[in-house]
Length: 506
Image (cartoon, rainbow, N blue to C red; front, side):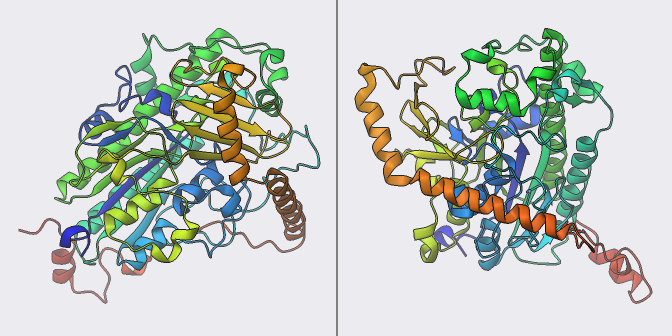
């Protein structure tokens, strides 16, 4: 039992990859071809200003699952181990009596590839070892075999199958199959199914069916055109360098094609999500629905692509929650993806008192009901394209960015949504700057943060090189299907099999 004596609700979580929240001012933008997401938005609480904990896959996802910032999880980059001892929402819900299932990507690094999930339906799309570890001891080093490069932009266009499309097709198929299986009620426990896609993450390649939807789109050029290298702030220049920008000539056609494919892949996701929601409906099951992204994508704004930045297009993400206990509405209060863990526990009636001191997220249910958030929203970044940890704070209309090797940044997002005017040196905003400096100094010791990141990187690089010598035991999750227990076998009664596998039953 949970809230008010009601049965614990089933929970269906959709996580997508690299979807910018700037395209979700109140659900999907009107011009996006996303009928299923628009239907979901109409019955959801929509969080207009939700931010990732870190604008990179593995750190953002570990924080999303645990309700902790990267400086706590230790997942600083895409090759940092997610500790098995750190509870996730899958642990909390499973402990409370839930079946916990994952279909798709979560970018777990390390030998634990479950982190509280009872069942995992697919392998991950990215490697789980330490091979993608950056090295702060070598600032400016570009590791070509795994760093992003602008080839994703120059090679954008159409494709009927790609590595990513193959993966997400499988994610959707396995999720749909699992929902059918859950409808058979062989297990009476409530369930939490997380369906995690890799789109619209680059490469910017889309099936022609979805590409054609955006033939006459008026949004194929960014709002802020490309800046010269010298016009960018130091961190943005590092992102450009890490992306090998100087070896590519990005044309207007490349930009339009990349953005068109990106929008097309949002429509592709919409179709997949529609299939899954349709299966839920056909099997007469109900669930709390959550839709969220791990981080955003700059999609050409300012001449930047991918993520790794605190600018809005990279750090802001969509978040929608549909539940019978919540009235649909738009919430403008800044929130974080680390709040989702506490929210799920609140919806399921899980007691988090034992770990409250180590969980930074807040339940979103009070804010969905009109309460005002007083705490700031925090972000961290300490991965490729950085030479020292960066932090960001969103509070009220302002966003503050700090790094020990860079000038401070302060933006008023209400008057300057494109973050073109740094107010950190303006006397008119000295009080606001001082307040953000106070918050950041109370929260972070950036020198110690830097030291911990460097220690983690150095240790992992040694371990990776070591394990690649001699016999190699992979950590990749291997989904196994017990063929001897599927369909019809001779230790089964045919009549019983046919009856118990039928759903719905008359």
